[in-house]
Image 1 (spheres, rainbow, N blue to C red):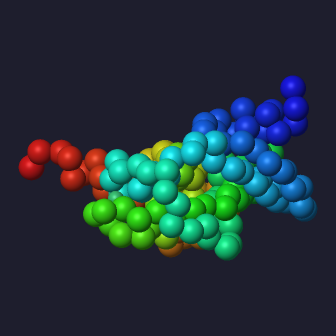
Image 2: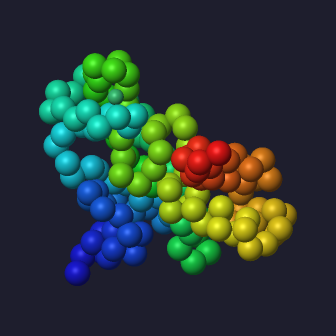
Length: 151
Ligand SMILES: [Zn+2]
Protein backbone atom coordinates (compact mmCIF):
# COMPACT_ATOMS: atom_id res chain seq x y z
CA UNK A 1 0.00 0.00 0.00
CA UNK A 2 1.30 3.45 -0.91
CA UNK A 3 1.80 5.99 1.88
CA UNK A 4 -0.72 8.40 0.32
CA UNK A 5 -3.36 5.63 0.19
CA UNK A 6 -2.67 4.83 3.84
CA UNK A 7 -3.10 8.49 4.82
CA UNK A 8 -6.37 8.68 2.86
CA UNK A 9 -7.74 5.62 4.68
CA UNK A 10 -6.55 6.88 8.07
CA UNK A 11 -8.32 10.20 7.51
CA UNK A 12 -11.53 8.52 6.36
CA UNK A 13 -11.83 10.71 3.28
CA UNK A 14 -13.86 9.83 0.20
CA UNK A 15 -13.79 11.26 -3.34
CA UNK A 16 -10.26 12.65 -2.98
CA UNK A 17 -6.73 11.68 -3.88
CA UNK A 18 -3.90 12.42 -1.47
CA UNK A 19 -1.23 14.14 -3.54
CA UNK A 20 1.36 14.96 -0.90
CA UNK A 21 1.90 14.80 2.85
CA UNK A 22 4.15 17.45 4.42
CA UNK A 23 5.36 16.76 7.95
CA UNK A 24 6.28 19.84 9.94
CA UNK A 25 6.95 20.14 13.68
CA UNK A 26 3.60 19.40 15.35
CA UNK A 27 1.73 19.76 12.05
CA UNK A 28 0.75 17.63 9.06
CA UNK A 29 -0.29 19.30 5.82
CA UNK A 30 -2.08 16.92 3.50
CA UNK A 31 -2.59 18.14 -0.06
CA UNK A 32 -5.66 16.70 -1.77
CA UNK A 33 -7.25 16.64 -5.19
CA UNK A 34 -10.96 15.99 -5.74
CA UNK A 35 -11.53 12.89 -7.87
CA UNK A 36 -14.90 13.86 -9.32
CA UNK A 37 -15.01 15.63 -12.66
CA UNK A 38 -18.35 17.39 -12.06
CA UNK A 39 -18.43 20.54 -9.97
CA UNK A 40 -21.09 20.62 -7.24
CA UNK A 41 -22.72 23.77 -5.84
CA UNK A 42 -22.26 23.73 -2.04
CA UNK A 43 -25.68 25.31 -1.44
CA UNK A 44 -27.90 23.17 -3.69
CA UNK A 45 -27.72 19.96 -5.68
CA UNK A 46 -26.73 21.63 -8.98
CA UNK A 47 -23.80 19.95 -10.74
CA UNK A 48 -21.96 20.84 -13.93
CA UNK A 49 -18.88 19.90 -15.92
CA UNK A 50 -18.35 23.58 -16.76
CA UNK A 51 -15.61 25.25 -14.73
CA UNK A 52 -15.87 29.04 -14.30
CA UNK A 53 -12.25 29.29 -13.10
CA UNK A 54 -9.75 27.77 -10.68
CA UNK A 55 -8.90 29.50 -7.43
CA UNK A 56 -5.26 30.55 -7.25
CA UNK A 57 -4.89 29.80 -3.54
CA UNK A 58 -5.51 26.40 -1.99
CA UNK A 59 -8.29 26.16 0.61
CA UNK A 60 -7.34 24.73 4.02
CA UNK A 61 -9.34 22.93 6.69
CA UNK A 62 -8.36 21.66 10.12
CA UNK A 63 -9.01 17.92 10.38
CA UNK A 64 -8.80 15.42 13.22
CA UNK A 65 -5.33 15.33 14.77
CA UNK A 66 -3.00 12.40 14.07
CA UNK A 67 -0.98 11.73 17.20
CA UNK A 68 0.70 14.93 18.35
CA UNK A 69 0.27 16.54 14.93
CA UNK A 70 -2.44 19.04 14.07
CA UNK A 71 -3.71 17.90 10.70
CA UNK A 72 -4.59 20.33 7.91
CA UNK A 73 -6.15 19.44 4.58
CA UNK A 74 -5.33 21.56 1.56
CA UNK A 75 -7.03 21.47 -1.84
CA UNK A 76 -7.14 23.67 -4.91
CA UNK A 77 -10.79 24.29 -5.74
CA UNK A 78 -12.63 25.41 -8.86
CA UNK A 79 -15.58 27.76 -9.14
CA UNK A 80 -18.81 27.15 -11.03
CA UNK A 81 -21.71 29.29 -12.14
CA UNK A 82 -24.83 28.01 -10.39
CA UNK A 83 -28.12 29.27 -11.91
CA UNK A 84 -29.43 29.96 -8.38
CA UNK A 85 -26.33 31.03 -6.42
CA UNK A 86 -24.15 32.60 -9.12
CA UNK A 87 -20.40 32.12 -9.25
CA UNK A 88 -19.43 30.03 -6.23
CA UNK A 89 -16.59 27.79 -5.06
CA UNK A 90 -17.34 24.10 -5.55
CA UNK A 91 -18.37 21.88 -2.64
CA UNK A 92 -16.02 19.43 -0.99
CA UNK A 93 -17.37 16.18 0.50
CA UNK A 94 -15.65 16.62 3.86
CA UNK A 95 -16.49 20.21 4.90
CA UNK A 96 -19.07 22.97 4.79
CA UNK A 97 -18.91 25.53 1.95
CA UNK A 98 -15.71 27.59 1.68
CA UNK A 99 -16.14 30.76 3.71
CA UNK A 100 -18.47 29.12 6.27
CA UNK A 101 -15.92 26.99 8.11
CA UNK A 102 -12.19 26.30 8.24
CA UNK A 103 -12.80 22.87 9.79
CA UNK A 104 -13.83 19.50 8.39
CA UNK A 105 -17.22 18.09 9.38
CA UNK A 106 -15.47 15.29 11.33
CA UNK A 107 -13.55 17.86 13.40
CA UNK A 108 -16.68 19.96 14.00
CA UNK A 109 -18.63 16.90 15.12
CA UNK A 110 -15.82 15.94 17.52
CA UNK A 111 -15.88 19.45 19.04
CA UNK A 112 -19.68 19.35 19.42
CA UNK A 113 -19.58 15.87 20.97
CA UNK A 114 -16.78 16.91 23.36
CA UNK A 115 -18.83 19.94 24.45
CA UNK A 116 -21.69 17.63 25.39
CA UNK A 117 -19.34 15.55 27.55
CA UNK A 118 -16.98 18.10 29.18
CA UNK A 119 -16.60 21.77 29.98
CA UNK A 120 -15.61 24.27 27.30
CA UNK A 121 -12.18 25.05 28.77
CA UNK A 122 -11.23 21.36 28.64
CA UNK A 123 -12.43 21.16 25.03
CA UNK A 124 -10.27 24.13 24.01
CA UNK A 125 -7.16 22.56 25.57
CA UNK A 126 -7.81 19.01 24.37
CA UNK A 127 -8.58 19.95 20.76
CA UNK A 128 -6.32 23.02 20.61
CA UNK A 129 -8.95 25.48 19.42
CA UNK A 130 -9.89 28.93 20.67
CA UNK A 131 -12.70 29.45 23.18
CA UNK A 132 -14.78 31.46 20.68
CA UNK A 133 -14.18 28.89 17.94
CA UNK A 134 -15.74 26.15 20.08
CA UNK A 135 -18.92 28.22 20.36
CA UNK A 136 -19.19 28.94 16.64
CA UNK A 137 -18.54 25.30 15.75
CA UNK A 138 -21.26 24.14 18.16
CA UNK A 139 -23.71 26.65 16.66
CA UNK A 140 -22.99 25.37 13.14
CA UNK A 141 -23.37 21.71 14.14
CA UNK A 142 -26.49 22.12 16.29
CA UNK A 143 -28.44 24.83 14.43
CA UNK A 144 -29.62 22.81 11.37
CA UNK A 145 -30.97 20.08 13.65
CA UNK A 146 -32.81 22.61 15.86
CA UNK A 147 -34.49 24.13 12.79
CA UNK A 148 -35.88 20.78 11.64
CA UNK A 149 -37.53 19.98 14.99
CA UNK A 150 -41.25 20.74 15.22
CA UNK A 151 -42.12 23.68 17.44
ZN1 LIG B 1 -26.52 26.45 -6.13
